[in-house]
Image 1: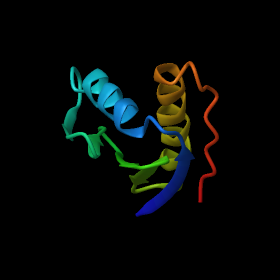
Image 2 (image 1 turned 90 degrees about the vertical axis):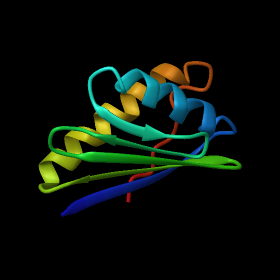
Image 3 (image 1 turned 45 degrees about the vertical axis):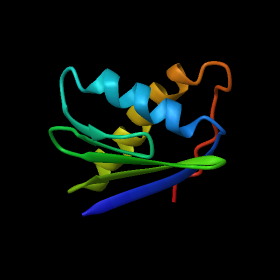
Length: 93
């Protein structure tokens, strides 16, 4: 299982994770509350955890290529919801 994690500095992590989870819940399996969200894609899982000054984002998939692609999908969607702060810095590890 391949994985990448980014700590994204923002004071609005809870707001963004809820917006993103609601957005994806129309087509994907999503579980979330104000502090944590999990989105299950057909071949990957993205989790987000709101912290006081950041949003912790993790992408997991069976293949590294899928993780690389999903990093872009998640970052792109988060930047759309965080347009006042965008582009958010994603330091993927």
